[in-house]
Image (cartoon, rainbow, N blue to C red):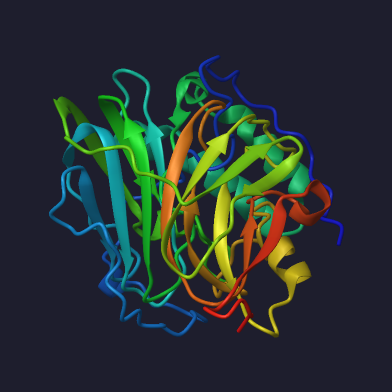
Length: 338
């Protein structure tokens, strides 16, 4: 499968600390109430009866929920190792990315200076003029290049819970979901955007212990270890981070595969910069993952693995061709597959 060709971005230079996520820093409009936003063409909810650990009261654990086009999260949390427990109680697939803002900048700056640029760009892309759409990014503010993207839960299907652990420094952050509605409207613009302050006080959270490891580099996604059934944690190490033509760096999302899952369609869906990319409904059941992080960073993802087939996939154009769509199987207790 070949992705549609997209022009290179012309964007403000980014901080040398991180290659960053060149796409959707913050396509933020004034949030609308989720109760006022009709959901069209959304996937059916799949209630998850399993209570994922760690529990909500453990040190360093932060609960974030979505009941519609919203992110219900605390305004302030402590720094250090932090496990985000993302409970998706809505009827659409979501994620949220953690964006550390430059000093003195907040979500309000993003609403005022970044939103119009991304709205205009996506409108042109949806109308079939990606070159004109990408040209809009020349209008982004200079401070955009200093935003750091430091992980967050990957895509989570309706009714599921995602658990992602990252180490957070004190600062001002924004969390957002930029999955798209069928008409191309970003969920951010429908209300899925919140500010977050990380204080100097330590959360007391501990670095998790991994059952197996995932490494992401220019060579692709490498899986080390033997995934087995049960509640499992895998480390995600970003050995390299390279911005792709559509403006994103590497991330990784965990997918449960069914017999009829179309891997070509899944790969095509991971490219935001085409009209059908990242639109609701999702083509498969997502169980979480890790958003983009700077090279050298490590996140931890916890998920319930049952016997069957799975995939790890990055949010880039044509991930299979870049070894960024990696399938694997989890055996049953007798060594077989589901």
